[in-house]
Image 1 (cartoon, rainbow, N blue to C red):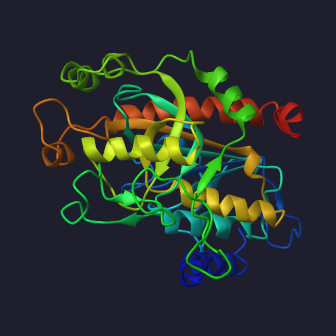
Image 2: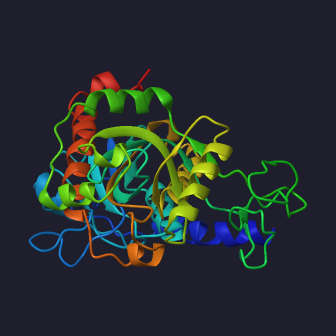
Length: 358
């Protein structure tokens, strides 16, 4: 039960706070919530929202020419909207708990009707060099969390590939979903979220041929990599999303992520990218769906590669983790381009999408 309380408390608090959120001037006295058709979720911003080094939010503010702000006291940043008030642009905060709390707070905010809204996560991440090159963009088909047991490898059996394994298991790569620590089985030990296959397929087909920006920094990084995928031009792919509170790195942990995503998705997905928010976002969406306030079948997660999850030849994992290389700017540009294409296809053709993607 301690696990249930620990994970639920910040979400509940955020949800209660949302009910006290201050209406924007245009809503005061209106009495009717805005009909929201899409929510764009980014996870961080650096400095100002425009005109300086960009985080994930700035490409949206500048690209969509946003200027109208909506106060969001229960969040971490003001929400932006556009003239029709059908789209919300949100910063969730980074790591699992802040992201989950922000989404829960938004979901219970009485100013917005989110029951038919599509949710698009637009963020950067680390990619598996066996799947795609830096600057690429992935649509997630599964999101997997990192709830696990951990034994320091220095104390683990010598034949263990790493120290992580399922809470319900006794060793790495053992899949056990029954049982649990609490008498009521309160932990979802698998912590796996399958996104709507029809929606993911639609988004991929819509964007797979978009020309993505390349740059000298990306070209130099491709030269020092040896895998076939890492040497390709940036592209749009589909695959597994591994969300963990720890920023991990290296060959061993990348292999763990490959094994973990494959195991928890029951061979339905393969690891593509790492992040620190998406399992929290999906858990919040699951609860909001049960509450009738949102629909997790309308969630899309678009992550673009700013770096790899393991070192280049000749590097140690520590050297790679502290490397000065960053494809952040290109990843942000490509991520915005791909996600915005899906956003506007939905919102600009609302009668076609109002009842869902079949």
